Length: 293
Ligand SMILES: [Zn+2]
Image: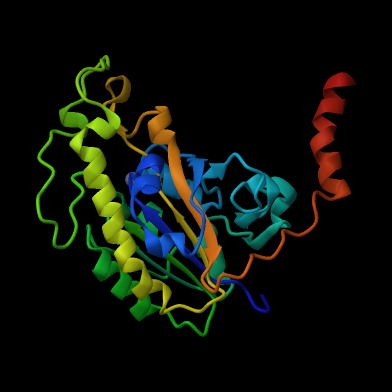
């Protein structure tokens, strides 16, 4: 890439994999393939803490960067497979990746829609961060206004349009169906319409299509070599097995969409060499110790 790669991490909050696959998203489709992945966190806070440590959602296919065991985009050294040597950017920060990249001279700019982004423990690693509420256009404005595209950057936006109640600018009719904790009983018991048969599914599809319409203004303003990660932080239950919303380890909550691509359409560099002999020795040693105490 010639210089330190710039990153743009976009999270569609709560967006289900089947929803984004169903949505008409020509702008995303023209850039990259959407994969089914498993997220490391079942609600906004832990999912983003994991992402900011370099643990993005994991796809099953052995595709570099989409599956971190075949190369990880950005890492904290000593805390990952290969010790960070197989990543595009690694830092030794004791805080998180944005903070570490900032110490290396990256610009780190973020905007968050969900209330969790009022928490300093999620945002303090960024040089500049704005809690916006759900407002994709304002978030894109903020990131573009605060980035100098001549210097490496780590940009981040958490979009709230795909979170219930799926509101977006100009939405013609609100989703009036009871949602999430309002509809949740414990112990959970499935009854009535679920999944695609609920109005929520179509509302989330609509919200994802709205966000897709906002991508060109963002993408066209950033340098071609920028590496984009577009994913959901977690999915959402629409009544499956009696579960509504997220914050539980249900398969529909843990399944998320993810795409990774460069804005100029060029392939990402191959991850550097596989594990070194020292790494392999380190991994084998505990087994030997168990055999020979
Ligand atoms: Zn979330």
